[in-house]
Length: 363
Image 1 (cartoon, rainbow, N blue to C red):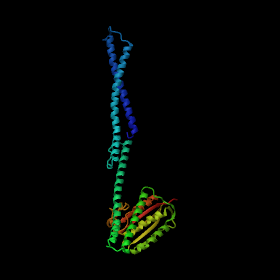
Image 2: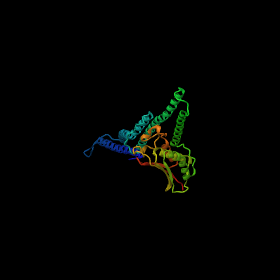
Image 3: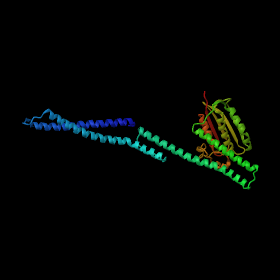
Image 4: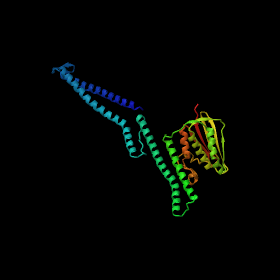
């Protein structure tokens, strides 16, 4: 029986049946024994009536009541033992869950409840283990995030501190070069803080979207135009292809612009001089797809599942000196998902990568 309700009802029915059957058996056995003794007391011997004291109705009732009391007490004892055994089988997984909850509350997030039950309590145990696994993962993520933030903040703060100390100790001159270095690091810190705020709001479901009808082609062209100078500095060709005309879509233009900017910034960073980046817009069923393809270094297959994780930098890009906060792709993913869309990546090492976002189109 997989249902706890059926188990409880079945246990109750089993106890009742055992009690009734046992009581009937013992009553019949005792009554028969007492009846034989009465008959012998009346002098039935070999089919002949013998002289004997007369047995009254009260004597018979007393004997029957005595038999019933004995049978009832024995039946109650058996039913109690049976009930305790069945109750123990049912409550054992509940006690295991209580123990698990207590250990979980003490911070033992790796603790898991072991139960072979397949009823509602078994489902509850599975849900408990799933919750514990999620909490453990969240705790690991929190610790990793704290360590990552400390690492990301340490580098620019160290540079600022070292430069200022050098100027104060007359090791460096307070010229434009050193002041610009301080300004760049403060801008980097501001960018990091803003990125952390955005991803925190998105992950907590508190990101406010100002949704409005937006011409996605016009928006994409404006973002691409703003990145043409950056691409030109590295001699990278940046093009756009859109077989659809005036595809208006209900989105937050500021957030989608941020998504496209992050994807373009990432593509330019990983594409060598002489390469190309292509932005493509198209309609697929009830979705609008925008892809950013580059001819860059590509992504290692081992790194591919992690590219949307916070602060993750693959291969040689893990160095702070190569720019970025390591949050751009994570923010892009959160922004797209906040619109009810999806973001995926395909890559071949040495040939480039394609990031594709899909946004739902109403009507």
